Amino acid sequence: MNGFWDEVKGEGEKFWAWQKKFVELDLLGPDRKGENGNELDQFWSAKFLEDMDKAITSKERKEALRMIDQDNNGKMALIEYLLWKYKKNPEEIANAAQGENKEALAAAQAQIAKVQEALNDVLAKLEAQKAALAAQKEAVRKQEEALEQQKKLVAEVQQAVVEATAADAEAKRALEQCQAARNANAEKLAQQKIAVQESTSALMKAKAEADALRAAEAELQAAVDALKKEEEAYAAKIKAFEDIIATQTGMKQAKAKNELAQLKSEDPLPLRRAKITAEAAVRKHAKQTKIAEAAEVEAKAKKEALEKVEKELEATQRELEAKEADLAAKKQAAAEKKANLEAKQAEAEAKERELERIKEELVQKEKELEQAVAQLEAAYVQLNEEMAEAEKQLEEIKAEGGTPWGAVWWMQRELFELDSRLPTSKMKWDHSKPFEFNEEIGRAHV
Picture 1 (tube, rainbow, N blue to C red):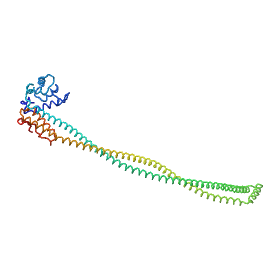
Picture 2 (tube, one colour; picture 1 turned 120 degrees about the horizontal axis):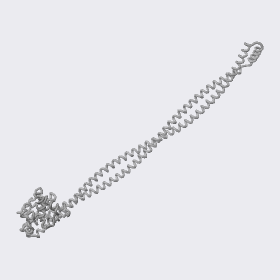
Picture 3 (cartoon, rainbow, N blue to C red; picture 1 turned 180 degrees about the horizontal axis):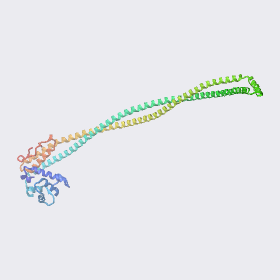
Picture 4 (cartoon, rainbow, N blue to C red; picture 1 turned 60 degrees about the vertical axis):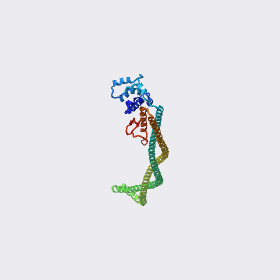
C-alpha cells in the first residue's frame, strides 16, 4: 500500500474492501486459503471485476484480465490488480519508501498479528462457549419441560392408583356381598328342597289315603248295588206272581199264589238292614273320601307352591353365581390394574428422580459454562493492553520520520477492525461512524 499511497490516500477503504473481497472469493474457490491466499483463478477473478468494477463491459473485463495477469499464470494477484488499476509498474512499487525503522514496523505488525490471533482465539472460544452455553440452557429448558411433564405424569399415575385402589376395594366389597347373598340363598334353597321333599311325602300319603278310601267306597257301593239288585229281584218276583194271579186261572193261578205266599213268608228285614248299613257306610266313606281328596288337593297345591319357590331360588342362585363370577373377574382385573399402576408409579417416580438428577447436572454444567464465558470475557482486558501496546509502537514509528503511510494506515485500520470486535464496553472508538485517517498526525479519528 506504501507504493500506492499518493494515489489512494483519503480512500484507503477501497484497498481494505478489495483485500476483503479477495479473501471472500478465495474462500469460495477450490483452494480456500483465505487470508493466506494471494491470487484468484480466472472464474473468481472475473467475479471480482464484475463486483468491484461495475463500469466496464464484459468484453472490457476479458481484456482487463489479460492485461492484469502479468506473469501469465492464468490467475490474478491483488498486487497485479492494483498495478493495472493505478497504471503502475512493479519497479515503482518495489522502490516506494517502506520506512526507515523496518524492525519497529515489523514489531508493530507482529504485535497487531499477535493481538489479532489472540482475539480470533478468544472470539472462537467465546463463540464456542456461548454456543455451548446456549445449547446447555436449551438442554436445561427441555429438561425442565420433561421434568414438568414427568411430574404431571406421576401425579396422574398417583391419582390413577388411588382410583384403582378404591375400585379394587369396591370390587372386593361387592364380591363379598354377592357371596354372602349367594350363601344365604343357598341355605334357603336347601331348606326349600327339604320342604318340597316333605310336601311330596305328605302328598303321596294324602293320595294313598284318598285312594284307599275311594277303593273302600267303591267296594261298599258295589255291595249296596248288589243288595239293590237282590231287592229289585225280590220285588220283580212278587210282581211277576201277582201279574200271573191277576191274569191266569186254574192251576197256574193257584201255583202262583202258592209261590207268592212262600216268597212273602221269607223275612226281607236282613236284606233291608244290610242295604241300609251299606248305604250308611257308603255315605260315611264318601264323606271321608272328600276330606281325603281335599287334603290331597291341598298337599298338591302346597307342593306346587314350594316347587315354584324352589325354582325361583334356583334361578336366583344361578344369577348370584354368575354375578359372583363376574365380580370375581372384575376384582381380579381391578387388582391387576392396581398392581400395574403401582409398578408404573414406581417407574415414573424413579424416572422423575433421574430427571431431577440430570437437571442438577445440567444446571451445574451451565454454571461452569457461564464461568468459562466470564473468564474469556475477562481476557479482553489483556487484549486491550496488547492493542494499546501496538498503537504505542505505531506512534513511535511515526515519530521517527520517513513514515510508510500505507503500512501505518493498514495497521491502524486493522486496530480499528480489532476494536470493533470487542464488547461495546471495551471499545476504544465509536464504530457507528466510518473509519477516518489523518495523515498529519497519522492516526484514526472516529
